[in-house]
Image (tube, rainbow, N blue to C red; front, side, top):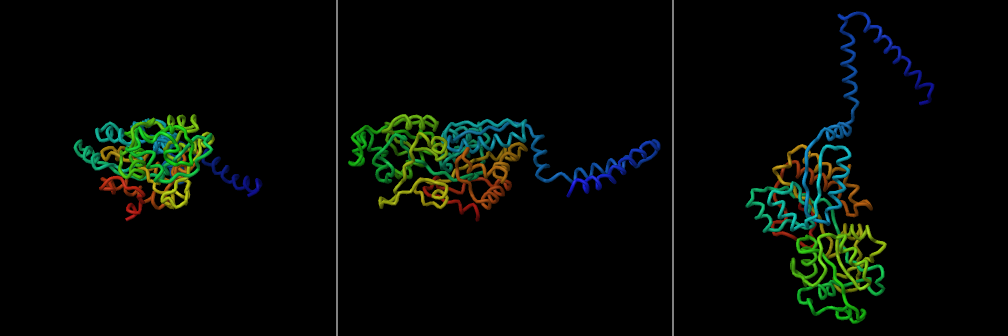
Length: 366
């Protein structure tokens, strides 16, 4: 539309407005101004889009949401909280990093509304929640690939087999496997500096299960932390260090770290964790889904319900795979199904035996 046409169309409206003004002066008994005002209000309401109405509703929310748990999932939930609070400024959302295990202790003790978890809830944790009368809703939110990393100064390692990782990390290695050439004679006669997740971390549980065959089965003489930033610094500062943590923390620090490909079967097929290899499950055995758990008793609180629905919506989920967050988002159909699971209040876990190495999420679509 050119400007001339636009103004021609506005002129009749101006005339109507002038007529309405003259009618107001006709006297107090005239009801037309009230009718006009009501009609205008109805028209304005009809022109508000559903998206804008939703944002307006979020703007009226108040309350506090306490989240804790996995440092791996922390960037996802923290990003969701930051984006949500742009619309819901009166909702306070705190996100802690007690680790998956430490977080479940708090969650099952009623100290948190939302639990970040880099693994599924264990059978013992289910019982702990049950003992405290805590029902929960389990929601997968993304995929992650555990990154095996060395310093950018490392010149000899680009691929490692699962068998070599096991030889390095199994309980029997403690105090014995201390140098690189003990793992592979082609590697230098230099001390290995090991950095890994702490015992309360779901990443520790998953890595030990995937590599050593049993969750929590690990040598103890390594630098452990639930804070992945500490692990990043430890590995990046020493050319003979090696560690593991969520792929997002590698992405944030790629300039000072080197990603090591993993050879699952020892057949020379080295696979690096990427969006594609995690999504198609070719990066094994270190690809996994990550979760949030919602306490059933708070799920219907308006601010909690709105936040979780936002977390799973198309408004936010594309940001999960952004450079700033660094994880792999699920398919839209999966998020839609998971949203229905939350809205229906379906409680319990779809992993009754606990953690599964190489788990897929097809069961949520059934």
